[in-house]
Length: 288
Length: 159
Image 1 (cartoon, rainbow over the protein chains, first blue to last red):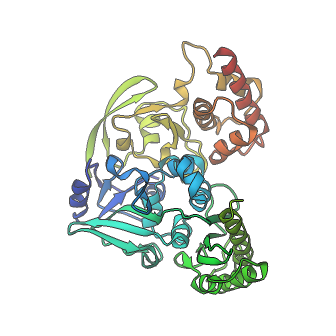
Image 2 (image 1 turned 60 degrees about the horizontal axis):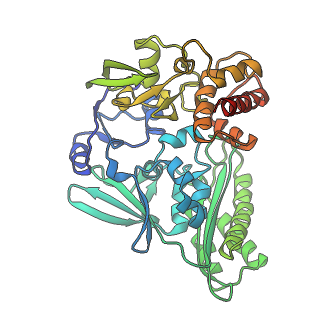
Image 3 (image 1 turned 30 degrees about the vertical axis):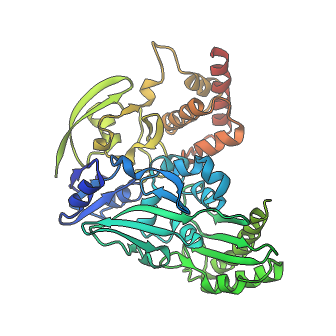
């Protein structure tokens, strides 16, 4: 399977890339680990590929101004092996280490994983749980998009056709905070049957100060389980509360039956994994 | 459709080629350069048979455009042996019977030799994790893991 014909440009700067993206039916090539297979299957046939792999300014992982800022072309393997991420952002470290397989992670990028708008990708739910922001740059300049309004539909994001996702930023790690990402996959490299991202911050008394819960591959987009989040705020981290929240998360899921399981199975899986992800997040927030 | 003049170093040797933008790296290797050691398995980024090293990192060459490798170094299974002497990882697969049909072997070796460059003394878990993107349908992986362990020991002796 050879992709259909297309023009290819590999700009070295972001402004050149934005200009190139203004061409008719142009599309960004990030890691290519989803787009190139889609082109080979003729499910995508852009006229022009704008390859961002030579825009070096888009690869970074740094804490700055109250955020963990991640350049959109940062490879998943760089996130997975970052000591900063491993030490202070366990939810992100968990997610980065289960995205597809280790070889794909050498090419795959965090920006591509988000901008693709695939509900089976792992960063969308992760970033929903973190309450992240996405930075996009287009011909008119830069704008910031809250992650909660970024995923519009199946394979659809809030990015305009001529905008490039340049950065995703996560609120910097706070004391008494922790997170976890739990994914059930049939085998390494498969999309999740379902997965749950949880990020919590506890107050001095051990009650939930903030809670973020994101669900992978149980709807047309990644789902932010807001009812479960709201339920837990101000409450203690008792098993009873966690179980009630997990039921609310399962209620928010909209799975469909496929080769990975029935609707009921997936909903039940969301409940179980929400319980486990919240427990682990709380344990990590307490320094365990 | 655009064509591009690219410079790629493959197994230490400089190559130049005019390529269509849609030419995949694996096709550049196999069809344009007749280097058929790199195999095409699933053709869908799943199996890892086509794994080569791009600037030292294993990638699936069925999911990289040849033009993306412009200015880079590619290493394939043909580049493992030096002066007719097998690389330790090749010797390991031979000694430990790390293959049956052999189809996945080039990809397995490109992934595991890259692992040993980064981590000369991997644990069994680390080996299994590293090769989890390379599928073998014959061996059950036991002997592949032993082959990588053999190579790690062999390289440590030589160091």
